[in-house]
Length: 192
Figure (cartoon, rainbow, N blue to C red):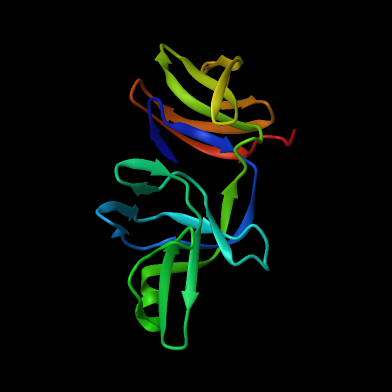
C-alpha cells in the first residue's frame, strides 16, 4: 500500500453490524403549516439503522439531516405500501411517495458496520523521514477525540531493518521519502 505524509496507515475500531438503509441521493422536502416552513434535507450517503430487528424506526448514525439550516439527528421511518413507499423523518415530515421499484434505487438496504464512538480506537500515521529514520504517530481515540496521554511518536531506522512494530501492529516498509511511504501490513493491532 502507498500513502502520503499524514495519511492513516492502520486503524482499529470497534463496532457492530446493524440492518440499515443508506441514501443513494440527496433528498429535499419543504414541510410546515400556517406560514411556518422548514426545509428538510437528507444528504447522499446518510445512514439510518435499526437498533433491533423488531424496530420500525431507523436511527440516524451521524448528523446528516438538515432542517432550515440546522443539523439534526432525526430518526427515519419507512412507510411501505403494496405499490408505493414513503420516507418520513420523525414520523411527521414525509417525503413524496414513490413506486416501490423506484424506492429500491433510492436506498441501499443491508447490514452495515456501525462504529461504536465510545469504544477505543487506535491508529498509526506516517509523519516523515530524516536520513534513514522514519517517524510515525500512534494515537488512541475515544468518543472521537484524541487524548494527549495516548498520542505518541515513534521512529524506525531503516539501517536497522525494514520491519516496524508498535502496540501489536507489525508492518514492513518497502520504500519511503518525505512525501510518501509504501508498506505491507504483516499483523494488525492486538486487541485490548
